[in-house]
Amino acid sequence: MGDPQGPDGRRVTIYDVAREAGVSPSTVSRAFARPGRVSSETGAHIREVANRLGYRQQEIFRPEAPVRHGIIGLAVSDITNPFYFGVIRGAERAAAEAGLTLVVGDAYESAAAERQMLDRQLPIVDGIVITSSRLSDTDLRGLARIKPVVVINREVRGLPCFVPDNNRGIKRAVEHLGALGHRAIAYVAGPEASWADGARWRALREAVFELGLTAHRIGPVVPSLRGGAAAAADIVSGGHTAVIAYNDLVGVGLLRGLRELGVEVPAEVSVVGFDDTLPADLVVPGLTTIASPALLLGRSGVQTLVAMKQGAKPRRDQATVLPVRLVVRESTGPARS
Image (cartoon, rainbow, N blue to C red; front, top):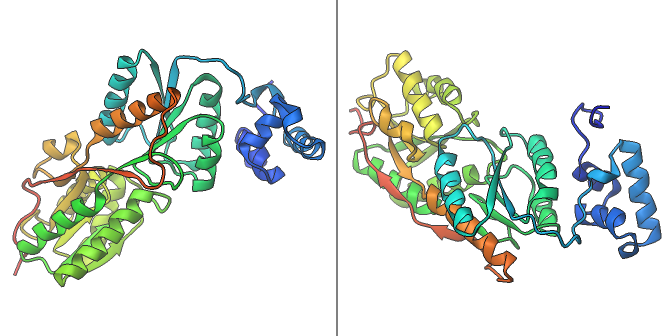
């Protein structure tokens, strides 16, 4: 028999039951694992919803079980994005140092796929580091009531979080472009559900305001080479001389798209990426970019999770901001006259 599926064809998860029942995922778990911990009325309602949706009771995680697996999870939004290579390596090193096994799950840039992946990981891990989540803050806080959770590349109030210094990175990039004579800067946006995208766009608007420049938003685009290439036509039609991309994949895609349109970089358009992944140093011209501390993000996330397992109380009132730096390569130059 196949997995039970919802009306949209995807596998029914604990989040579907919780959402339909109007309760938290942890309440659903308690209703099946410790019925005495919820009212009889609530328990009956949850079981009715679970049966109606076709959710198998044995798949629902039991948070009170005292089992320790020696496994921690790492969830990434797109495992093909080179940014995550460093995150995974940093997380793996920290896990190995703690004598733990790391399990990596890919969300395919989809909130629905992320929910299903996390639902599969929850029963087998002692905690999860979630990177660039596309889930809501409420969903993430609900997860944290079931297992220890650390969030990377996103800020969620009430949870331990680690983020790169988007404000400083974007400001350095804007200052660099301004010094080259660019007066208007385009921003090619990433996914609407991306916290980092919103943070970078806000930082860009603040930076151009301080320097007396202007900013223009293009997108959102899929955070991929193809998404960046598709945005090249908008850069050209808008007459922009400088652009900051959501990440390096979009930036490298822009280089390709501009080249296909016969636009010279940086003679006609300067391009800046974000993350400083391997492709940024391999393309011609080399991509000027903001180096994000991927290794440190992964390591910090796992080390914090391990400390939480040992009873530590990490900071939850605001994210821990990690340093970035501007790496200048050949894709930026003086504004055309």
